[in-house]
Image: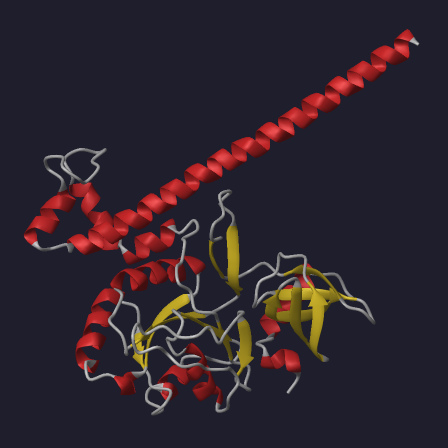
Length: 348
């Protein structure tokens, strides 16, 4: 099969290339990004090219040149998974994956369910524009199977939950059937969750390295070091991702509303329009918590992410004001220098 077809190239993608790029530009897809270099799938095979830092795994790119190929741009992204860059005071986004159709939130069954992590990851998944799935892994390693599955279904709030075991093969056929030709499923979860093992089981061979998981805390070694596309042979693609210890949200208000719609619906029932939902009389949120209709843990999880996004926007506003101020000063300086030059010219 043509290499590009293995990585999801379809007639629809071809039509988009014809619309956005002039003739002579060849299509390609970013298979992997790594330290200023990218692997690109083309009709001729896989190429190693330079990256200016603006590309994400999954991007459809245009290539020019007969010998040394150069990336000249990428198609508009149909979906984009992104997060705030870690330790970034200027609040910039980090693009993690582009043009993914399904986003599998991987939850291992060999450790206690982290509800807050699940909710946070689902917020990012919904906000990406892809269809989220919750994929339970390592079903063969737990005796708490039924209880954990039931709890996960409840916490997922309508998102489809699939149970799998890479070791025993359970659930793999069902999951494989969810990925059609030309579709990409990205797997997102903590280190040691079994993402690479799941990919190997679906692909039918050892495509990705796997590592041991510590029994003391359930953490695994980071065997996956970069986001990478793995073709399944019929135009369906998987994307492996490194384990994430944390996920700082980026402009994810839509995703927050999808996951916590039941919480936000309560706001309309508060007595005061500017209710802070803490100690005001007539607060519908606190009334729901007192009545047992809303978990306090769920409310605190929502409030933490909502405040995180509000803080992000404040920093973005400050950064934008600083950029505007610097640009204004440059214009004023150039204007003063030009005026001074004109005056000296007239005097001379």
